[in-house]
Image (tube, rainbow, N blue to C red; front, top):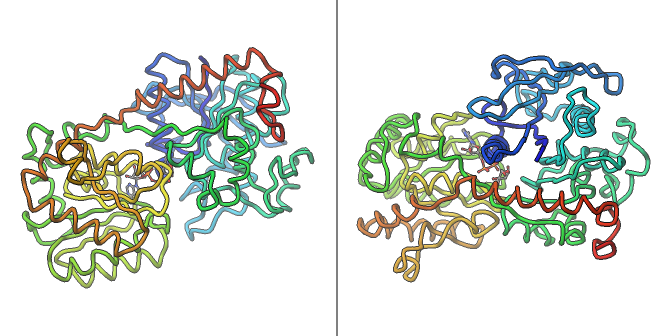
Length: 500
Ligand code: ADP
Ligand code: GLC
């Protein structure tokens, strides 16, 4: 199969969150399954710098803008990767979506419309590549216009759109629509209009042949008012063409048996090295080295989604009583950053905070902690809880989205049948999290039980090969349907049952 995978992030070229990890590991797993998948990304400065032997393959003029299409191989994979080089749009220092002052770039709608138009040219074999994909796989709002634009072409590939986080929708004021020079027919509630705003994610949700999201539970949740942000009607309407495929873990990067970032390697058979990793982490954060005290950790974007506020409230009494230590790595909302720093300042011997983005420290934290806190208010999939499992760092998670799909709560039955892998709790409140931590701490006191739980967690297998297989089956199914187009083709505003 020929597949074009369009994303705005790919590790290690550009990463603001899990999308980058998923783009790289999924495309490389599909490549390893011997399918011709190729990636296309905006040519952000680091992306250009980090691909060796980049070559210009063609120059296109799109809407009056000259765009060079560069080609190379995504580092540490064998995925051919195209970079859309339009310096006025993408050659900006800092964050891919906002300036250094954290305000969104004012022309994001134009930037990602240009990106989408280049992807469309590639998808229609109009980019001088002599290669036409049969499937275009788009990810998140940055690529939402691709399915909308392609829907107007009969000879288009089949289109998959993956929602990594429905909270980010690419919403713009209505007047921005006119700046994109799109056909008026898109301005409808079946199209890109959302309560009189321009919604780029709706381009994917309305026009792709199939919509996926990154866990089965989240696929169900976004069809409800609580998690659908007003898009639940559309998502329910698409119920038969919406599914959840759990993300995977790239164990080449995330396994304590060979992780190069960590102090000592360890495995379920030989856990010794984990103690050294813990000590190294305590030293790195400048907290007291207390081997016997449970060390709690968290990594993440500091936004309300992730529940850092709950963590800070729940751990405070534990720190005051010196019953646990806490290390935190993240960056985001100023108020949350300040609150984290303030708590660490009150308990400098037992709490460490690193504000910023640090790949090596993320690995060291996964390896050195005993317990990983992930009390997300919602979580489409979440990667860190799966990394934690592999590092024997028992995750404490809320029962939501991918967290619910990947962690098995430890209670009498699951401990007895050895299926337990972590602690799962329900209400998004600090007392509920505190109670979950207490449950973990009491298990931690019983060394044989805790060690058994660690081993069970470490033996879970969320490797990408399995998840990639689900995507391959989806692609194959769509190609099978494509043979019967237009009768079977998805069109917005048309119930699938009407044409099947
Ligand atoms: P999300 O995509 O919502 O941010 P995920 O759990 O899917 O959440 O993925 C987050 C990814 O980003 C993980 O690989 C995590 O280790 C990484 N990450 C988040 N914040 C930081 C940080 N401050 N430093 C290093 N890595 C981080
Ligand atoms: C998003 C979600 C996260 C998911 C990631 C990769 O950023 O917040 O839960 O794991 O995308 O799909």
